[in-house]
Length: 215
Image 1 (tube, rainbow, N blue to C red):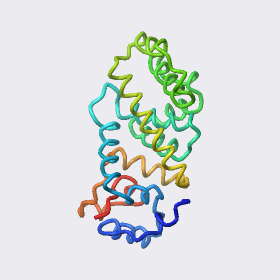
Image 2 (cartoon, rainbow, N blue to C red; image 1 turned 135 degrees about the vertical axis):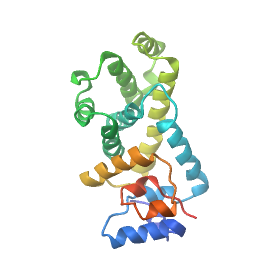
Image 3 (cartoon, helix red, strand yellow; image 1 turned 60 degrees about the horizontal axis):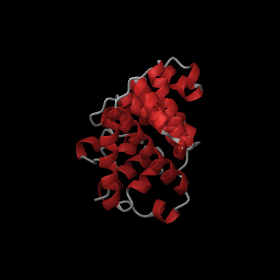
Image 4 (spheres, rainbow, N blue to C red; image 1 turned 45 degrees about the vertical axis):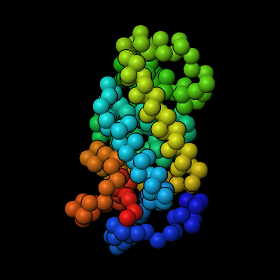
């Protein structure tokens, strides 16, 4: 991580205890946690917003929202978020399907309506200024409601932020095993970063990807 003063600043409260447990277990501390534990007056709002966008009521399933995040990040050429959320999508959807979409959307097993949605996501990643009314009309013709389009757009926009936030801070990739673990945690705990004492003694490094707050 490039922001060394933020990365190395002492952890406080339950975060400090959790970090100590990770180090004692020989596990790495995911660098994104240092961004979340800095200026928590801001990041606490970010956490709640992300939870609502990714897990709140929507015509789009949590698995599709995770896959949108992974696909957007892949098209935006940011591997950390792509890998992390591909693993999360694989907890809801068939992992082979997730891999197919990320590798070759057009030849994947997605149905035609979902392919149209992901073409829109790809356009948002590569050149959002090129989106026109015809793109939205094609989505509607494919059966998507305006609420679904709105939610897909919001997920993509959230990942634009996270891609920039993490890449600009120099957050490093994790191991394949860590991505798998973080995907499981996102499935079971969501994005609520809540250091409850009863949870603390169950967490692994990947659990902390979703549970950091300084007190």
